[in-house]
Amino acid sequence: MPRGRILTSKGARVRSRPSTRTRPSQSLVRALAGAAILLLTSPAFIAPASAHGAKWESRCQIFVGPDVMNLASYSPDASRSEYCLDIPSTGHAIIALDAEQDELRGMAIGIRIVKDTGREEKEDIDAVTVAYKSPRVYPTGTINFEHVFPDAGYFVGIVTVTGDHGEHWVSRFPFSVGMTFMRLLPVYVLQMVGVAVAFFLYLRRRPIAMKRSLT
Image (cartoon, rainbow, N blue to C red; front, side, top):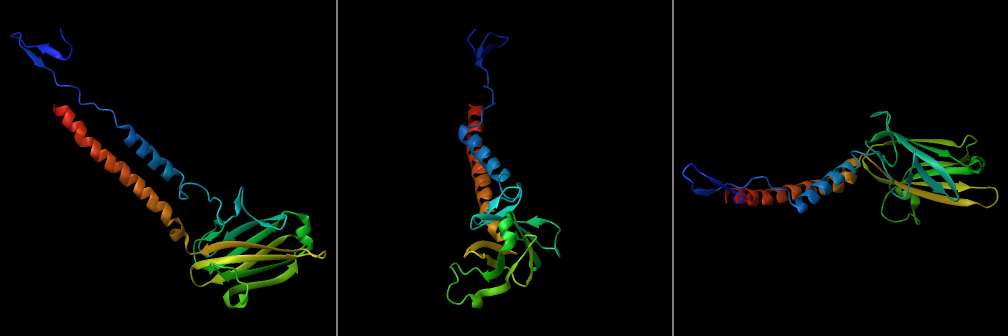
């Protein structure tokens, strides 16, 4: 008997209905996989990663000349969490710097916080300065810089290090206050686009599968 046909009680041949099971298209599978990867690798699901040129290993790090300083930010009035370069809320903030190399503990270190204007502040740095801590030696290598940020925005931290042998190093680390959502907005938009494309491909594939099942 030919495959796909059955005999009725009177011996007449009728075509059996083909299976309605269809394999999902490769493009749909790729789209769904891409959307899943995009979602799982977003900052909402993983630990804070590198940003603004800072290096994230077990903590955030900035490079000052040939040396390294660990950096951590806190928003004590809002959370007990430790942040790298994105302080989630305005108000009281603490920026902690810790020198890894011993030579930094014998050098004068100063910190200045300025508004991020998109260019280096060379002419009138005082006009954009929001906080300043004059250079001094920190024998323990730990510096706690506290400031109250009344408004959300983007800022730049400038660390200057001066040594007794003519060393003069400057390190800059851009950071934000109360702007976490805006920084992650492009990631969320990409996620929604990926999900929308996958759903569109699914709807486009579904009528084809239904049409085949009826023929």
